[in-house]
Length: 417
Ligand SMILES: *Cc1c(COP(=O)(O)O)cnc(C)c1O
Image (tube, rainbow, N blue to C red; front, side, top):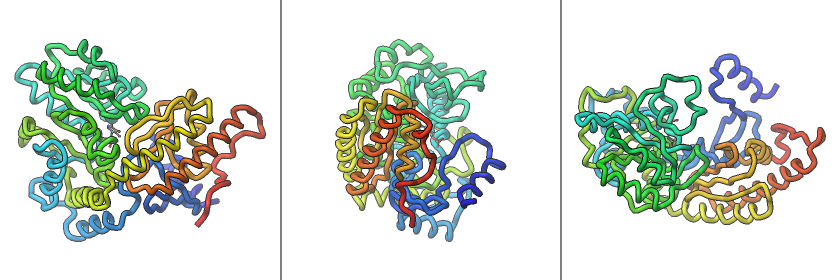
C-alpha cells in the first residue's frame, strides 16, 4: 500500500464525504506540489485562488511563525497589534472606510447581508438581488444568495429576502428591484460560475442603477480579489466604487481569514452587539495577510499576474484553435477558463495524469488559478501540458474502447523527487 492509499482509506472512514478529493498532497513550494508518493505537480489551482503568493513563501511562513510564537489569540475583547494595521492596508488599497474580520468567504458575505439589512431596516428594505450562476458560500443565507439551484437542493425552507437576476443583463436587474430592495451583490468575475467576467457596461450600469435607487452595491471579491486579476480587486478593472466588498481565499495566502471592507458611508453601521466572531482577525491571521500584501507589492506580483496571465491566455488560445472541443478561452489576469463544448472533468483528470492541477467548474470549464508569482517558464510548461492532454483526449474521444480507458493516476508523465 502506498502512503496515498493509507491517507485515503483513513479519510474515507472518518471524514464526512462533503468533498471527493483526488490526490493526497503533502508538500508545496511556489507553484509546485508533491503527493504522498513523491509525484510532482504544477499547481495551477492554488487551493482555489488561496495560495496567491505560492506554497510556503518563506516570508509568509516567517510572519506566521513569528506571530504564533508571540501571541496567537486574545479575543476581540482586546486590541491586537496586527488587526488595525491590516485594516488600514486593505482600506487604503480599496474603499477607504473600515474592515470587519472573519474566517471565510461565506462569513464575509454573511456580514455583508447583515450589514445591508441593518442599513435598510428603518425603511423596511431587506431584499438583496444576486446573479444567476453566482457563488457566495454554503451557509443558509449565502447558499440562498448563490444563483445555482444545485447548492440549495434539499435545504429548504430557505431564508427570505433574496431575488435572482441575470448576470451581465442590466434590464433583468432593473426588473428585480422592488420597494423592498436594499442591495445588489455581484462578482466582478464569476468564478464557480465558469470564469465569466462582468461586462463593463453591466458593472457600470449596476452602479448607476444603485445610485439612482439608493441601493448598496456589493462586490464579492472572495475569489477575484488580492491580485488575482492583476489588480488588487477585480472591481478596479471597471470605473466603479462599490459600497463594500467581501474578501477571503487569497487574503491570508493559505492562512484562514475573511474580511469585509466597507466604504466610509457604511463604516459604522455594525455596532457592538450586532455582529461578531471569536476567531475574526486573530494576530497570526492578520500577520499572514499583511505579509501577503507586502509580498505582492515588493515582488510586483500585480504586474506579474497581468503579464503571465496574458502570456498564458495567448498560449491557450493557440491550443484552443487546434481542438474542436474547445469553444473559448476567457478570464482576467490569472483567473482563466478554458470553455469546452462538453463536460470538462475527464480533461481535468488527464491534465492531472500529465502533472498539471486544475479544476473543472460549471460542468464544461477548466479553470486555471496559478499563484501570482508563477513564472513565464511555468506558464509555458503548463500550456504544453494542456496541448498534450488535449491531443490525448482527442484520441480517446475518437477511438473509445476498452484499451483507451484512462489509466487513473498512473502518473506516467510525472517526475518523482
Ligand atoms: C469560495 C467563494 C466563496 C465562499 O468562500 P468560503 O471561504 O468557502 O466560505 C464566496 N464567494 C466566492 C466568489 C467564492 O469564490
